[in-house]
Image (cartoon, rainbow over the protein chains, first blue to last red):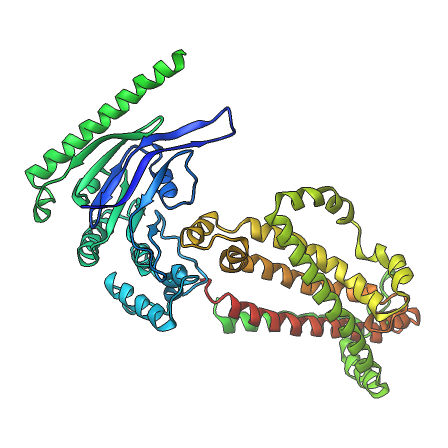
Length: 262
Length: 254
């Protein structure tokens, strides 16, 4: 199967020439069409930065990103769901969803159609005329998802989208997201620091070690999706990823000291 | 507090003030620093207004002052907001104006009167120029800080959804995001402008200020007070209209 998106030896560094700090290096991620990939790592490891590089908000220092999709005038190949919903408070919900549709070749009827269909898809068909402040945090995040889906992307990037929500809302949105994913067949790259979330959602879990970050392990999650919450296989997988993450941190701690030596 | 309760309190405050004033002047309280005949009771105001209206002076002065005010307000606001936004957007422009603003900002509008006369003569333009100065600075700084406080995350969102160039970002994020701050600045300027109108007309351009100055020279305090209330009325109306406009534009705010 063809990968929808492939990064090759991606590296990012911040700071002035000469005193640059490498955030991550040698990152190779490949996502198949329709695949749900989660990326876990400790806070500050560079997970968010990676999504920003893939969505071309930050330029990489090295490497390349290849998006293998047919260019269609009324779509955008990549779109993103942010940690805070980040809706524009001065736009109605419908206008927020249409943000990415402005500036691409799309008719007004099609714009309206996509607004309505994404609103239904996220389970909030009647809120188009409201202002963001009239919605709850969970509802706002659903609108963030609708906004990202409206551009019909080949790949959806999600930056800890449920991190700021309470546990109950988070659980229900995780299931919502899986339903939306199975209905739309989108390829998703989902960043989180919550290992259970990563194992629950992903077909694969990529483990990011830090300083400078790179993918240290790639877990395949072959547990039946109906049996993921609380099943023994699920808990075992979570433990396995956790152990991997601890190992990665220990590794980088050693890596740091050896870096300091020279 | 319920709106009606609030309304009652506001009206009581005003009526109480007028009654106190009327009482003090009627009782003929006389103190070393207080001569009642120099402070006419408010009950004389309607007659004064009728006389000024009869002479056609009131209408003429109000129209002249409105001309100065409106031109000064539009000019000062437009320049202040435009330059304030530019400064906030560009570090180079910001650096270029840093010292200049520190030099010119503290100069009171009235200090410009000699230059206004030299450049524009004793004209409506000169009065409008004086008024625009105070309004300019208010808007300059409020627009600057309004743009600086626009949520950077929203700019990133707009960029992520394909709006990459400066004009698109200005239109879609910066200006709407800065709108509450800019509108607050415009409203402050609205009041600031009326405060300068009187002073801007002191040097001989016809208007409310000139009429007040003439009357005060003749110790004709009724007329002075009449025009004080006239300014209050004009300010009240313009502020009311502005707030209605502001609430409409900012309907998205809680």
